Length: 174
Image (cartoon, rainbow, N blue to C red; front, side, top):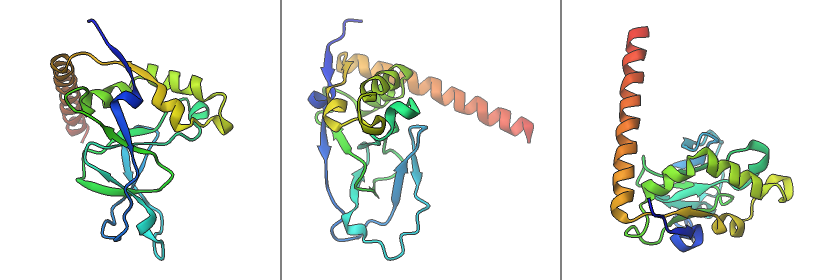
């Protein structure tokens, strides 16, 4: 596959939209397993207007302690149309979905090679953290739109089969 490597800053834009009217109350965080989790924090009395809005297909990343954990918590919002997150999370979205599919980018972020590279870069940071600017310089191969679509479709088929087999196994155990 002939690939054209691009840096993340060529593909994504950082978003800083705030919940200024306080209408959004679904508070999420990103786990080390690269998925969103509902916050268990007691938000009574918390000013949610300062929290960041994340929308469907946007990404959130925790750039703290990357080298210590050896993984970079990063996820694409898929299960909600919008939610809010702590201002500590950088949120970003794909600039042009004709250049890179959010699902393709998500697959790349789930690779162990991506985690190893991020941990290597973060070693020099304070407490193993990675500045946004360093994260944005990371490069990945960006094949044609058609190739990305095929890769995503094949990946989704495999994940669906794994999920189905797990469901069958769980039912057999029950």
